[in-house]
Amino acid sequence: MTTLYLLVDPAGWPTTLDPDVFGAVLGAQLRHPNPPPITVRGLAEGWAASLPAEECITFALITHPLPPGWVDPLRAWVQPDHRLFVAYSDGADLTDVRELTALTLPQAYHRPPYRIAPQTAFGLERAAVWMAETLYETAPMLRPQAPPIRVAPTRWRNLPSNRADAHAYPDQFTAAASGAANYKLIAASTRGKTHAHHGTFREDAVALSATARWNILAVADGAGTAPMARVGSNLAVINAVSAIREAMPEAPTTEDLGRALFAGLGAAHRAIHNFAASENLPVSDLHTTFQLMIHWPQETTCLVGLVHVGDGVIAAEAVDGQFYLLTEGDTDPEDSGRTLFLTSAPVRQWMSRAKVYQFDERLNIVAMMTDGVAGDLEPYAERLQSGLFGALRSRVLCYPLREREGALLSMITYERRGSFDDRTLAILSRE
Image (cartoon, rainbow, N blue to C red; front, side):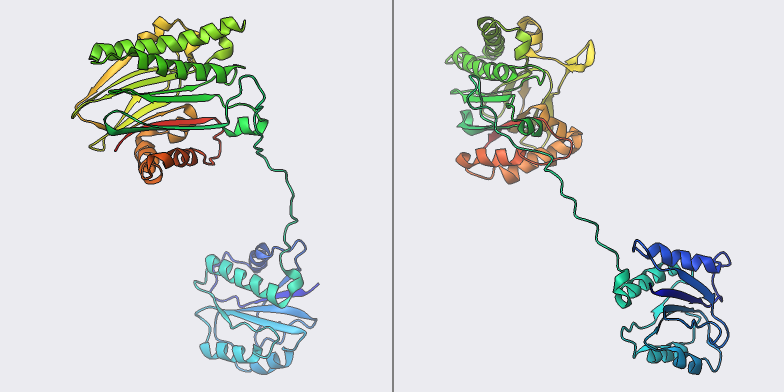
């Protein structure tokens, strides 16, 4: 093992830096599991008494002009078994520094003297980094050893769900449609990491449609604790959208918009209960949240009818850039930790939640999302504009309609630490 010496000129250092501190600072920079011992000596007058006799690597820290006659003993000492490297402060004589440079230049590994600035504990620590790097180059056996490579299994798998199941749904789903008044509708839904890891089903669902005057969107998120949640969510959105299409008269009024909302809500609720009865299942096996929207664009204004039960968010951006949270996720008033489901109360309870917004301007974008997306956009005031609407414009809505489905799916298929849930996003956008 190489012997390591530090020859320290005591002048000019803070009084708190006793000799042992110099060795400790250098030792802290050495990353070898068995670093060499460090011997610290004061730099004696004339050097002769300070220079070690055995084979070694020596660092000299010089802080003031050297006394006359120092060159000859040092020239006799420097040889292949005695390697010297110098660090100096601004108190040293530059002529001395140049002579030291010439004296150590013939060494197999040469480094010019290092200037310590400032001459404080901070300057000493930086000098210790330089000394450690020099040591690794002149004595390669002291270089830090690379840690062993650890082979670990991939944490997250992506197993397909059971396609042979009687109630199988695809692990990813997209849809697009041209809507009323030159609006476009697109949607994408993908499994979360937890379902992919276990090879279980996506429980989110989405449906889109349009009539001559209305744009219709529905989103649902089946409960993770419900074994047939995927069936409940899909029954809800498909039947709600179909019922609204049938409920629109040729010349609708605002009252017709409200009646159509009730028709869609009732159809969703009824379809789940009928399925549970036909399969002899408890309705709780099909628990699902539910979002339903009818958008009625007019010449310069628009009406938006909504029903929202459970978590998730519906947000909109107006033509002036203002954004609105039209709904927010809600929980059971008797238990704030429990999500509300369409199937956990009579349909008349949810009818009281139906509302119609009248906007004095057209909307640019409306976004409906399950909590797998909404949770990653909190806080909404900071992230809706840039994290959602801005991203939609730059990554999805810039494409022709036929290409937007894949772009939206790509946008919601992101990696984020702590985000494991299914993600579904349905978008209504003005061309």
